[in-house]
Amino acid sequence: MCKLQEKDDIGRIELVQKLARENCQCLQTDKKEQEKSEHQDDEVTTVQVKEQDQNVLVLKKVQSCRPAPQAGSVESDWRYVVVSGTPEKILEHLLNDLHLEEVQDKETETLLDDFLLTYTVFMTTDDLCQALLRHYSAKKFQGKENSDVPCRKRKVLHLVSQWIALYKDWLHEDEHSKMFLKTIYRNVLDDVYEYPILEKELKEFQKILGMHRRHTVDEYSPQRKNKALFHQFSLKENWLQHRGTVTETEEFFCHVYVTEHSYVSVKAKVSSTAQEILKVVAEKIQHAEEDLALVTVSFSGEKHELQPNDLDISKSLDASDRIFVYRKDLADTLNPFADNEESQQRSVRILGMNTWDLALELMNFDWSLFNSIHEQELIYFTFSRQGGGEHTMNLSFLLQRCNEVQLWVATEILLCSQLGKRVQLVKKFIKIAAHCKAQRNLNSFFAIVMGLNTASVSRLSQTWEKIPGKFKKLFSELESLTDPSLNHKAYRDAFKKMKPPKIPFMPLLLKDVTFIHEGNKTFLDNLVNFEKLHMIADTVRTLRHCRTNQFGGDMSPKEHQELKSYVNHLYVIDSQQSLFELSHRIEPRV
Image (cartoon, rainbow, N blue to C red; front, side, top):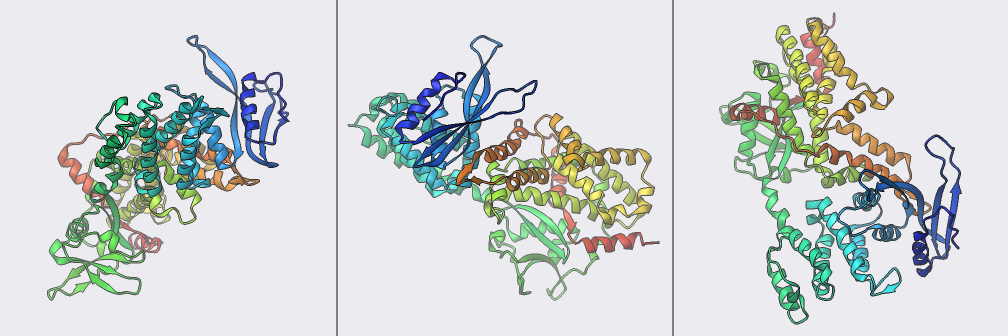
């Protein structure tokens, strides 16, 4: 039974007929009166699709606007959006909603994007692949034999192409998706002679799979099909082999500990040798490279000296292992650095650096990390109790970086024992924070402001007393942006006005996604709560908006290399107790 109201679009009868043909026992409408206001006085209608007396799909009727044929005008249209449903029915509704024009309407495009961003929450990639193959191979479409079969096939192929465009390299790592792409490509090869309209989709797949040879429709005739198929799969499948060529150029972060509570954060290529990493550390701690050695120390205290040509250092370490830099004495015996030894005879290099260029290099570094984050990483981070592991690597790097910049600010200030230079350092960091805001790098901006507000730094009354009034005023204005009141309203308003490219404060973005996740159930009555997933996908799409344009900072090569080396390898003390001890040593409590 289905009751249609007078206002309903009569075209929706087709949806009702289709659902009836699929043995749905009931279509039930629930109307909820909403409070009338100046802007809204319409009823919200939900449609519950039932099979075997169980809900399988819940749709909500909403009004949407679309461009009218006449230029500059807008037409209102009623449509149904997914509230909840089984994975299979949500996918089916999505395919029914797709149309094959060049540009989808906004609601359909959003539904497709929501589904592709969040499907891993409620189904495996293998499940999705199998479901798409079933839809592609179906001989009936909307209950009609052979009538709109090519239309359904094209819709499936459109969804697959959007999936590949969204996930890019991620699909290289999944065996199910690789096999699926091979299978569906073979199917398109089989079908293109019978349905020539699929040739456009076939060319798109050839492009995606890195197959550079093009064929005509005649080549897909039954007599020539096998020959073409053999030729296609004897080619190198660049797309499927792409990941293997990247690993040597991939970068990783490792902490090389100088003392128990201080380390140099080293960004290096996976192919870097132990000697190359040691060179970076030696320069950072201002010691001769030949007098130092890298040593791995296990949780049990077992030590192993790394040889200069050792490779794959990041992969050879256990989770609890640490890398230390030790000094060699005259007998080549290795000795650890003593606590607080790093503060002696240490020049403050940052005072001679241009603050704008330094902020620019921080932006360069952060942008390379931010631009590498896949939108899916936020989904894995939110829904996986273990944090997603390798699936959230780039996101974890950026979060780690935020923490390190905060510690770096405190470390630099507290290792400076001379009051005059310490005042200059605080002024320097205030200016760098202002430049980070001007360059729209809110991740480093927050980190620097929080570093200056660290208890071990903020207690340095002698230092802060000597900071000029204009710098105190500037810092107060910067601090106001980090004010958490009214759900970080000051930050959100300012960030919204900034044009891309820009880097958000990532911990807050993750907090927003987590808040939606924890405040709403993922499943309602055994159905996927798709409204929740839409809210999460909408928040995740913030990344896309921030990366609408690409960032490129200009700097002279010589200055760039010096600053890049400094910013890429920060020296930090990661123990709050050690930082407090340094703070009390340079400014004892009166």
